[in-house]
Image 1 (cartoon, helix red, strand yellow):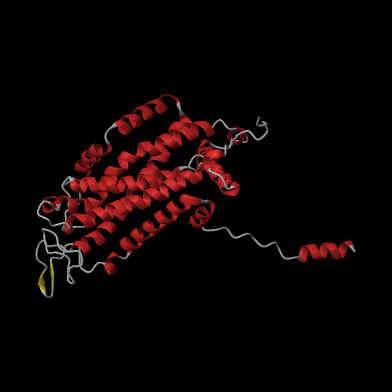
Image 2: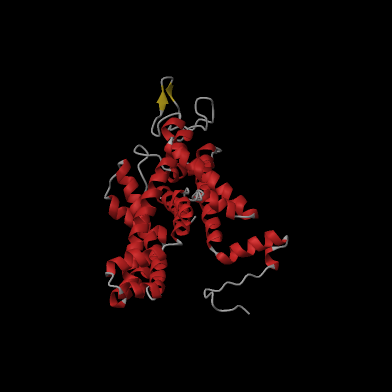
Length: 342
């Protein structure tokens, strides 16, 4: 009898694995009320922005520097028509094409700036927080000085230093992205360093050192993975700030040349004189594009921030399940499960 039981146990099929939901869908399910509305709206806008940037060559009716077609030149400051859906600029460019191609430039700058600043900031914060001592004090002072400096002014200075007069597509994109990267590095550094200082004194880190784990293994395997939980929120919020910084650089004339790539901030700068003449289409559409992109990314970032806060998450869930208001429910959290809450 026992032989049959053991045979059945060996031949029994393994239990079915529980499928993990897609992270964004899981976040939508966890959200409630207005938080869900904000998250869904933000994700919708961001998805449209990414799709427009990726398929810009298909969506845009003309090239970003094209001033005419087989029927002849477009003309300057022409109102919206069947030939030019959103009109033309003072330089004779098609506004719709410039807006669509401008989203592609913005997406490239955001990706490069956020990835570069996150990697540099995390690595510096990890090393500084783990080693400590005089090296940590020096890095903290430098990071605080950079963080206190006006971000747009710092981006302008770094853009001048990095670009060196380059006007090519990748030269301008890299100059704008790297200038924004310098602004963002202190933010990642401060967050990661504070977490590393806290985590490195945890018992599991001490246990890893006792069993003979090297410093690099302790840093990257045990400390790093427990110190970057809030990075997705920071990355999302920084993406919206990167769009504004890029638009500011372009508006002030430190962006990309218009014949090398489309940039929404530059187009806004060129449309300033048109507003007083009643030519509204050259400024409205690039401005609306910037506002919508920043709004969508900010909505996603703020929603992720709320979902990452256990106090807000618990308060909202309790309010929804109880049918009352969020302000009527008080949720207490305790990091020590062995301590009773009074």
